[in-house]
Length: 147
Length: 147
DNA sequence: ATACCTGCAAAGTCTTTGCAATCAA
DNA sequence: TTGATTGCAAAGACTTTGCAGGTAT
Image 1 (cartoon, rainbow over the protein chains, first blue to last red):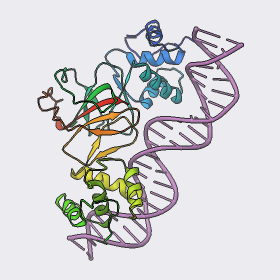
Image 2: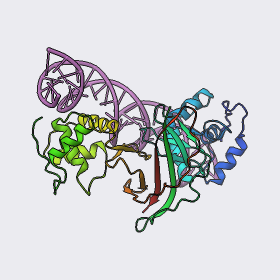
Image 3: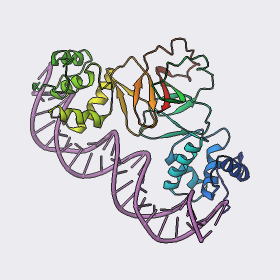
Image 4: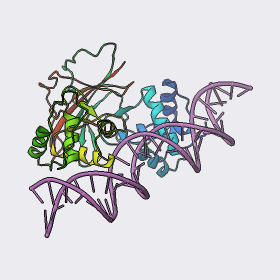
């Protein structure tokens, strides 16, 4: 793996070493590009929601060479591996969330902004019976607002 | 308004007259195209969820002349007027729901199919405080399944 | 008469694909 | 070595736009 430093995380919250560990634990080859994107995605406290274009822009800004196609590939691999999640909005863009455990969002229809909801809102929710033969994947809640 | 009959509703659940009434009530001009699309959209018991392409295909199949651009325009006008709703999924396509009152869905990740949930699941849900200055639009619930 | 609506085709936005070169195991 | 991954550019899928002509009020 070529060593390339992520320059975008002010606090470098996620070291390259830890990024590699995250990838290996998820069964993903720790290539240079994936390590960079992992650092960018999991920088603590920022960038919890992202799109392919936005992540690409950040990687360029951070001085890291990654192609847009690879960003798309990577986001899908990461999603498949379960370390990030796709978020349902009705934008034509696909949003990803770096917190695979937290599925509830405010969605600002005026700006397209996504804001996390930390409350455990769905704790007591009783789901109806699933369609025949179906497996439950997850439950998404989107609270639409306007600002 | 040119008179053009919708041939796609086996039971013609929504007559042209009623479609006109729906449109007028919503403050929309009852043009021929809008009447046709209204009939197709609100045919009872079928096609509760649709996309622009799918609605376009149905209108062609029904022998009605509507352009794809008009289908897009119309879906947006109807959404703005509140007689249909956009549904949040993470597909790149935009889905619309002809029931503006019912926001809960199963979303089959394998097939992209949307299935209504009729239970009043969110009756007792307590929302967290909205971000400052924000207005609540609606609450969407998406139960992701795989078949 | 006037403002709104429609259709067409072109353009735009976002995403995927094909394939040769490169890389990790 | 070998299969996975990357980058590039081209293609693809979906949606929007500009504008001339048509339509409802």
